[in-house]
Length: 234
View 1 (cartoon, rainbow, N blue to C red):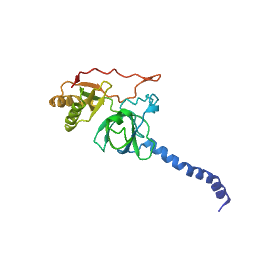
View 2: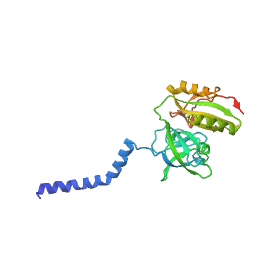
View 3: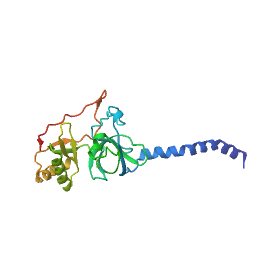
View 4: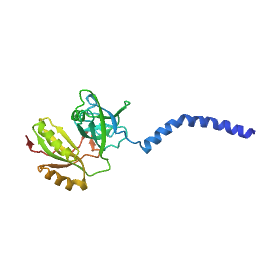
């Protein structure tokens, strides 16, 4: 080997070794930039307690009583329908945090969302995920079709709406009222959705915009729109 080639190879060898050590890191960064296909089936867990009131990865203040969740890759503001495969119960949550970082788990729910799909007791449940709306869908609405004093009547309304193809959740308030909401309605579909609801007999409803964007934070308080009152049905 000529002397100048040997000298050149000797100089490049440390560089190649350094690149070999950095190669796994480069792959991780590339995957993060390009994005990975989100897992839509696996195990869900839930979190609350000491995390309540802390800032999430999106900059929102975590409120375990809100319908939110942590996911490793989905954009903040994405609306996801989470279904407990053991009992069929579903909840629609907004992704506002990162996690879970335990192998085999695909989503970490707030306490309110975990209660909605009846998984508080066991702590972990088999779930499937359905993307309702991405964060880029700015005009997404929810329609509250009723507020019921009896949970069985709320469940009856839920079954009728789900049979008609709607994505439905039940939100329980501190006043023992169960609110039934049709979720994830894009703005162009709003008139048609309202007509379908009226044809099903749901004529007393409230339309409100889903929060798909990160709300502004003042100090450690979120600035959120005021809730609209609704008549309570039996």
